[in-house]
Amino acid sequence: MAARADRHVLYQESVQAVDAEIDFISDTYNSLRGRSPSVIREDFCGTANSACEFVRRRATNRAIGVDLDQPTLDWGRAHNLAKLRPEARRRVTLLRDNVLSVRCEPVDAVLAMNFSYYCFTDRATMRRYFEHVRESLAPGGLFFLDAYGGSDAFKEMQEKRPINNGRFTYVWDQHSYDPITGSAVCKIHFHFPDGSKIRDAFTYHWRLWTLPELRELLAEAGFARSTVYWEGTDEETGEGDGDFQPRDHGDADFAWIVYIVAEL
Image (spheres, rainbow, N blue to C red):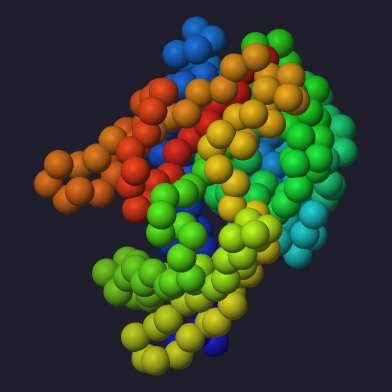
């Protein structure tokens, strides 16, 4: 089963929820700006799954995807863009470029999701990235990021989760963490019912940033305000309920995922 599987398909099924993500971006932008966003840039876009979902929503929406890995962009073009109608396909632009220096038209929103920007492991580079995003936004534009943390985030541990009624198991491997440098190595593996595995399907070398650090850097980069949107809790399951609301204070949960929205 592992030999027949496509790691990008597995990733999209187990990690991404682009429908909910674009819902949050559209609703939040509308709430803050009184209109829907028309042009977005998806940084670290990978297979451009979010960009494709965005253009699928409205006939006037356009998206720009930026990533350094050409084979992954090619996969997204062949599998995600190919599923769009020809007219919608023309409204997606994929760029093999560096998010630190890419140049394109001003956009209503920039997205940096799935903690991808954690690859910037020093303050100077992260601040430079945030500054470049700010310069890329049209008047009234918003910068959307996600972040994760909690006491479990600092542990070397594995978490397994069955996907699609056990068709495969997603394994999140917090492989190593250095408390002095804040550097972390995280991996994704996939296990299958027949015992076969795809080990190290994806490997990330990150710094585990905290919310105060990120918000301070956003302010240093020139953003006027940043807001943390904290996920509510389902009373029956004790898990996140998918409803993210602005909060000034969070809970000392073992694990949490939030959105950060930065405004010009």
